[in-house]
Amino acid sequence: MNEVRYAGFWIRFYASFLDTLFLALPVAIVIYFLSDGNWFDFSQYQQNIQMAMSGNVHALDTQPQTSIKWELLFEVSVLVVTMVFWKRWRGATPGKKFLHIKIVDAKTFEDIDNKQAVTRSFGYIVSTLALLIGFIMVAFRKDKRGLHDLLAGTVVIYEEVEN
Image 1 (tube, helix red, strand yellow):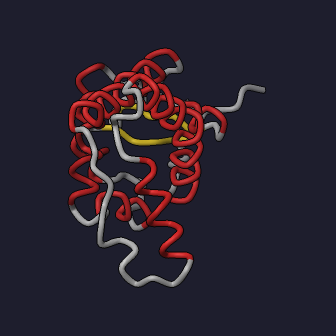
Image 2 (spheres, one colour):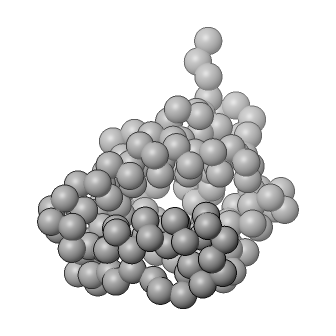
């Protein structure tokens, strides 16, 4: 193996943005239509945006009602789809694949196993609930590991380029 190049904060941020567009958004659209519009009140979102654009300071006082059942289905679906990509593309989601980075075991730099995938996925929740510090710490660590990486024993690296 050549010298390991750790993927830093911004490249991982861009990969997450791409995954939102190409992975989470399509899942959200499917679930919204499967719920027959009962997942959340989209008209309330539109009304809030119109009120905010007109300068109404109370635009966010009323939040749309959401269905916990459909929200849980969305969250679990994104988790499962993400893990399928990790397995299929050896530690990469569409965003990571496009940017030539991947998730590997932090000690062996080999593919992650199912336990690491599940731990890392739930680690995202911990990283988020910790005021996003679990993600921000990627910018300050030499090995560029976030809290979710530390919990799962993973690291994100650049893929080796074959000559």
